Image (cartoon, rainbow, N blue to C red; front, side):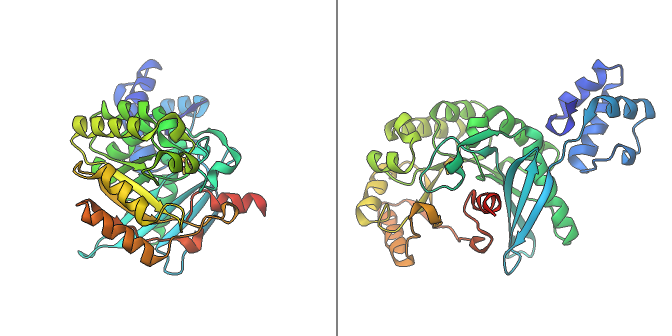
Length: 348
Ligand code: SF4
């Protein structure tokens, strides 16, 4: 059966034409599935009976099953646990009220069931990679979040961060196709989409060649190769010099500033020396640094960096004239660290 939620407009138009229907039927189908988020052929009122009969016989709109929804105290962080054919996936919605009175609803989507990258601080890494998610499974996370927001009289998802379970650039084709659908059908501007990577150099070059105006975020977590390799095994394959060259190429090609993500763990990577090394690596290159209080994950023994150490770290980056933000840590009470909700559900 054809998985309709994994198809973009061109695919649906091609499907219609290849099966003897006019091209515009594909566009209508695309609008029902991806714009209006209607998943019942019977409700697609402008489609003729013969096209619906063809779809019923040959295609499915494969949805995940909602297992749990957890909200934080103020309902500003909502975590969805979804089951896609036995693969448990989480997606986290962060809700902000902007100063202008509107809503900013940022969804952190997963791209793989599990992950092969083995980052030490990450619960998702624990059981390795089960499989890549399809484009439809990535898009369906947005469908579930939008349904929740509609029920709560809120505007739909406005921003996407590919920072949930999995390494997005290790599932490149499905991720890139999902970006196209989000941008085109769900009206999420490229500049409101962030793709986060642990530093897969060839895929960074491939993404640069797309000339997309999205934001690339790179998890660095140390400016020292030896320490970075301990925290992130992928750094053995792509050491800092190779990664920094790729990021410089990326910025030169796309003219977009790259965000450096740096999770701070108490007395592991949050000292003065660590900050100085990071300052020297990044100064005069136009990066933006996000400092993130590292989420404690019980089985790793890593602890969140205290606020005063984070402030001291940020002050050193400022001395190096590096634009730095300290990320507000939302959603810890819904187990906001990647992979934790799934891990707890599996263990219970
Ligand atoms: S932090 Fe991201 S890339 Fe690293 S193991 Fe976890 S999910 Fe994979």
